Image (cartoon, rainbow, N blue to C red; front, side):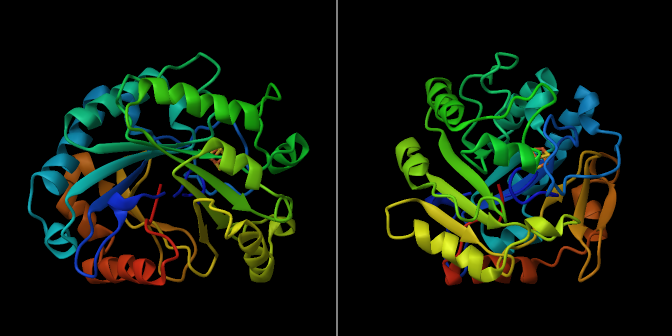
Length: 321
Ligand code: SF4
């Protein structure tokens, strides 16, 4: 995600697959690198890309190509996975920072037949700088790592003015969204790290009644002091288990790469097998979906088996959002 919380990765029954079928394919479009936060563990870095959203016609071209291929076409990936719906997940950076460009892309995606979702840090949802178009969003994931402002500050989850979404604002944002987004599914992403692994989220998560609480073990970064052991992560999960919380844990060992990822330039990209960095396709609007996919060596069998492994291991029912 780039990041596994916000620049990444949610859940509901529609994502579950049988051994031969996946109901929903998720495409993650990291629409921008820009973010008002500066999280220490953030992976959403592409080196100031030439972001595609600056041209509305480019947004439309990209969405048309994706819809024609994945929704209306009959590509190999559809035949193999047997998905019924395609969800376009807007990630970042912070997508809402784009304001009207994001609104336009969201509405356009809906019109072209995608299910829609967003991963956001939530900070713009309450500050009246942005109002989501009515009924344009099917799912929202808000990243939230701590009920303590000192921890959020230390993690970099704070903007230049010192604002950092707190638990009351999180609840209010979700409440307000329920008025404008009919049937919205909700998710909280928490990156468990050295600063919050002993924190108790039971009361907060049970009181906000989200559909899913995804907890992710922090991925290795330059900041080694944030890392926790597998045992610490397990203890965090155990502490919150058996309490009726919609918890969905992903440890470092089980966390999958997101397979259909588009960068801010409008290119598919993938983790390099066992190597650092990413490999990129050409821009989808220049060469088309099929050619771009072939450039990142998407392996449908591996893609399918990994969805299957996740499902069978009951660790998580979704690769991303
Ligand atoms: S809030 Fe911004 S800085 Fe933090 S992980 Fe998400 S994209 Fe990165």
